[in-house]
Image: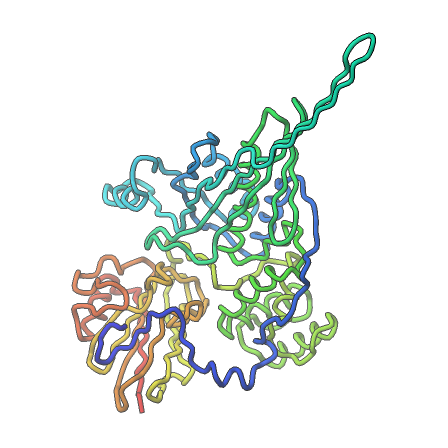
Length: 507
């Protein structure tokens, strides 16, 4: 499936398995999957998630997370049996996890009576003052309530000359479940793997006695205490706090399991970190490792994503002192060992769930650097895949377009996988994104001359382009000339527009 059935091969498939056979023959140690793991995970009891939310605040601060805007349409009770203020519980939890870091900003809308996207669009169209569209929204529900799932009773009595003596004991167990998911506001796309689904078993023993519960998550046990008058509502609050820690941690790609006291050897934790690592480009992996090595005092060079001699020396020393294979190469084991909350702020976290914050670009001139894995003037063979990288020198709004051999032009950035045009300064952006295997550009015509062009400005001028240039992403726009497209951008920003073009030859 593609923009143009004849030439432009934009693949939107579940996965591209190029090189799978050869990968089975010669696999690198750093990309090898875990073959075995402990069958029984360590058990640990936690009685309160308040400290865990504070820990998440510290974690967001350490990883440089700030200003991510979110909202919710509410957390309804699909069972109709638990009338709890779930939305307010959610807002309180987000607030406690962002006190110092200011990582998440909750934008409140009265969305009970209309669809979220329609509500936001109506506010934007009306020109509401200081209006801000959030980046993400949380949706979820209390999905299960099994009352009296277990009901045990026992009684005994004895008759005495002076009276009767009786004793009784009863225990009732109820199950309540909460599901949370995260979606992108602009596309209404639910982010895969960024969510939580937990169930709590609430046990009431005796009349007027205490109640307790347990949550099973990642092989660990989380216990809570509550009195009879609190009932299931306190259990719902615990589920919201736990689910929020997991969901926000996955969205921001930070090791949230540390705040739940989950051992880093847990197989699910290792797999989560592995997914983040595999979703990074090689430059992003090196930049992350450089940043952490600087924090821990191993490296005093530049954090630039280049594996130079100073980086290799620092990396090898860290590996040697931490019982890793000291080959001075960026590996998953090294990345995982460096995932720690200590040290200063991390400038480049793993990009899998790194949110893009929509805000004004910084003042000052913007310039673009566009390159590829085949150089500045690349030549590719038929059936090769494009691997381009673009950077802006200042925070900016960026749009990139691709022209194939038939002069068909389509917007390749932003797209449905990376919907926000805002790009931070000096953050490499891969085109197509390496974080998604669902979008690839393959060359299929020998002798073709193709082109990619990117435009950047300190303000978002893409929305102001004439309608002929506003086609859906990865679909042909109403022009077959890059010069015409460039003139349309320049008409919106005559002084501050930056442009970079790369010509591609297919042999």
